[in-house]
Length: 222
Ligand SMILES: O=C(O)c1cccc(C(=O)CC[C@H]2O[C@@H](n3cnc4c(=O)[nH]cnc43)[C@H](O)[C@@H]2O)c1
View 1 (cartoon, helix red, strand yellow):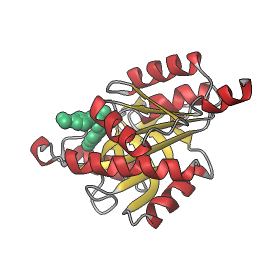
View 2 (cartoon, rainbow, N blue to C red):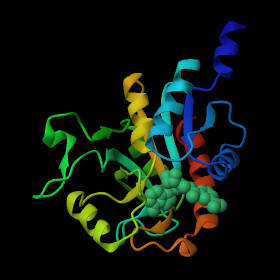
View 3 (cartoon, rainbow, N blue to C red):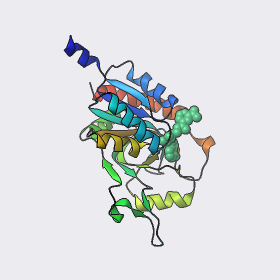
């Protein structure tokens, strides 16, 4: 009986920023008891605090940050999916006259958190088998959504391999890392990163892709 109860408890915590993303993922998870989906709110600080609260209440084997995101042109088209190979705090550091200095360069910590191996590549492969357009690449975390060509170009120069940016990944990953739990980030692309044009965001289509991510997660973790 105790064993049965243990098996029914969720082993995987999915943190997502807003209700619409949570609903899309839950549709895809289709009632699987392996997963719990919880809300972070927007931004890395709330994401870290809310994830730490969830991890204090229950122990999980994996933590996943999932949601919609901006994609870099020619790397991650709108409605495609990006699985993070690493989660990078892109604005953690210092400006200088010579350019941005990361926390690594300042000797104050690490901007990148590696994602759970081999689950990131397993998820990428499963999504590819499901005929999704999918990229395994670094995902940036920023507290400010990029909205100019200048910032877009600067980010692409500093992170030439990055495919996407969102606002919660590094917060979720930091809380998971401090708890010693492997972390993944997966994002459905709603908009191209560049000059702000909120009307062009394909939120409905990205949420549909996120629902398919939920389905793929049940296949990978079954
Ligand atoms: O208005 C809606 O119906 C709606 C439905 C679902 C999600 C939203 C959001 O605004 C989500 C905000 C969330 O999305 C991430 N995001 C999306 N695009 C970008 C981007 O270009 N740069 C950074 N973050 C992006 C981010 O993680 C936000 O938390 C609205």
